Image (cartoon, rainbow, N blue to C red):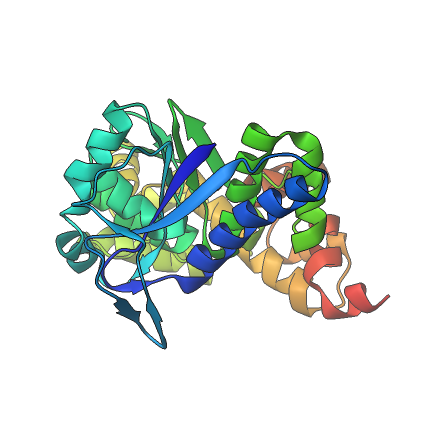
Length: 326
């Protein structure tokens, strides 16, 4: 039987992460019991100690504390909301325990912004991970030695698993159910909990807000120019002339300040505008394409899919209320 340690961190812990994780693993046990097979999972709630934890509206009673002696196979870190620096400070006592479990052979999982606690252990150094796309810039600033893939739903590397934002954590738990209990059980679980199985990207849900939390004022003005004139053809040379910078200097400073190249930034602003039109207007795909400054259908569709993970038509069918009603 696989022992699962579901952590109950200090702070505003995600109850949905805890409840859904507990239920999905225990429902697998129930399904196995119905066909006369033994349980696969033993899920225990682990706190810093055994004292009840008050989180927002509810109180959680840990089964075990870090001072207890037990062996675990899988450590799961749920999301904890609030200021990331404070969350890490409040939960620093979990860090050596998590490291010890990993070194002793346990695998480690973070759900959504639980990735911040996981990254604070150093176990992600040089590895890939994902987290909620809204927290990507903050994560990169705090953990520059981690290879963040904010468009991913799931990462799996060297016995460390991470999930994207919010309810995409369900996809990671489903992934683990498949790994430990088989594909047939994963499909059954997906049907019971009504989860879209094999979803791999959170790109369709991402909203691009230009990174302006920097002090380079000329670059901020260049960003604002792009955002106000995305319908037009904008070149790097044009921006360099307009803001009195050499091309190489502009590109270097732009990448440093925004984490995007100039061309990437222009593309993302245009595609974000296209997404809004596809969500709210009656324009067809070509009309939307022209309205955001593209004239090449192939280039527009390729760029759109690269950024969102799906085609413009799929996006419109998924998020436009009138299209959904058809």
